[in-house]
Length: 222
Figure (cartoon, rainbow, N blue to C red):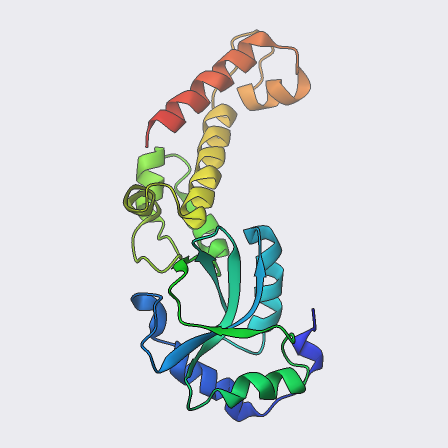
């Protein structure tokens, strides 16, 4: 994989992608006949796709990850007019800016955008709401898959198929559980919180049982 940070290209190309990509994620990922996604890579997991997308996003601001129907994750640097500007693909390949197997795609095989560029902001909201229930926290956090729903609503609408809202939910569960276990004293007589007892007395069945009960209750509150 070539690193775009070490390759130069005309500023007009960067502007070109910005102009034709900025509005597209609001609707369907299937583009009209005169446009194509420029796909520079595909990976089987979101963990493998994310660092690639992050590297290209330093120059191509509309870089995103698209979930395909086959379960793979495609990295796009934006959309272009096609076939009018189809030459851009060969131009970027010849400059070494993008991989030689980069291609155009109409969007027919894509389900949703799964890039989560705002994860730090979401983490802050989750932490600040740690004293609430899972329902309350997930209702406050917006999913960043492009659906414009809260994480809670995205999970319902997309029937738990969105990896972004699932990741947000897992973080929320962990933060809520830690908050509760940190603020409840263990009844084993150690005079520590359940969370601290779990760490210092891993063999304590009292703290284990209470932690399991807390987690079950949090997960049930969907």
